[in-house]
Length: 345
Image 1 (cartoon, rainbow, N blue to C red):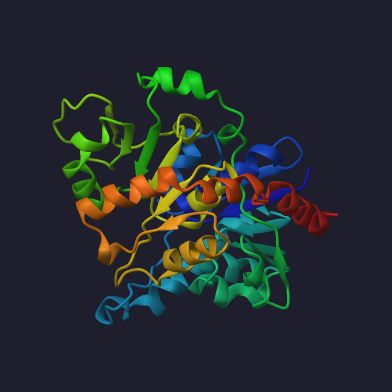
Image 2 (cartoon, rainbow, N blue to C red):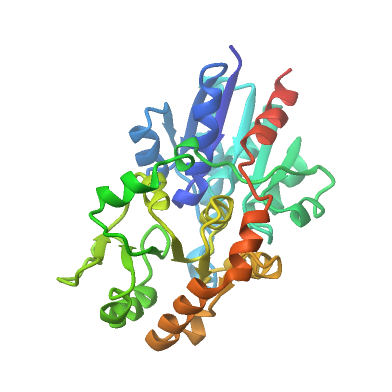
């Protein structure tokens, strides 16, 4: 069987989409994963994916001194990545973005190993900008992004099958919710302090009308005896979370945003805005807002009262619900796998 090496890391958003593809490809191809001793290693181990570890160097935005050693560290990263590729001898390297993919792609290109990369966001990430010309294809989650590349192909976002066709009643019973609508609230892989704090200020009022399932991030659970409020640090089964959701409040990372839209869950997005972000979440949110598929609250406008008001407006937005029912956003797995197979023929 032909071999596919997957790469991507630094955040779960660069790893979980690869796992979604591996789940569908592992019976027909030998699949493995290369990355750093970070979240990608943990997720791969949890999902019984063969993992190869190397060191990668990350650009720290806005901090020049932190980046002075990058050229020297990068040479070592490329060498380590090359050693893994020489050992495994894959027929294809599939990159999912993030700094981990740069040394892997450079090493693969030197060895004439075909490369496919996938860009999650509308705005193109730095790594994909740098490696695009070395790739056979640059696959994209959003139609307009493909136009930035001569080898760009719009496919949509890879999503795990366990997110779909789950039983809502069973999910709500699992979390002990009553018949009130359920709002899920989450702020990315590590949670969001500003969302957590403002949500908790209005819980007594919200929980009179709704059940709240709050994924608050590691170490962020607070003491609370408010009825209809459930806290989790994180969840390994977002399919169960989504299944019980009537509405959502979330950041706007590409993967979770596309999942929420594909599952037709009315969502209030609060995109991340800070100096460590390139602004991709803001652009993602505006894209879906322009299509009438979500509501958006700017982080700079976020207060507890505004959050409460915006949640009520979300619940009452019938035009949004109608637009979601007509939306064609769906899993991109089949299109992506078709592109992979076209290279491996």
